[in-house]
Length: 73
Image (cartoon, rainbow, N blue to C red; front, side, top):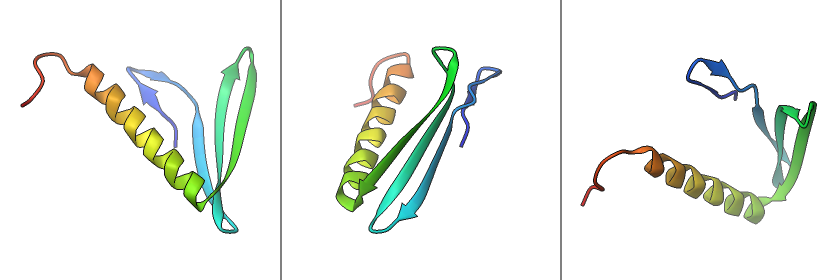
């Protein structure tokens, strides 16, 4: 999955692969301090679920901050 926004390519990638009883996540960044970087996380089932919940919460928080105007009741 790559993210692009407002006409510019960010170029990052995220992949998930089943690995034993867990998952292997690979996050690729094209330029971190002038060099490409790949972060690899090997998570068991409970760690993967906790990580997914944290990402969903962070995405929701970030999305809420983009709305202009009063909060809905």
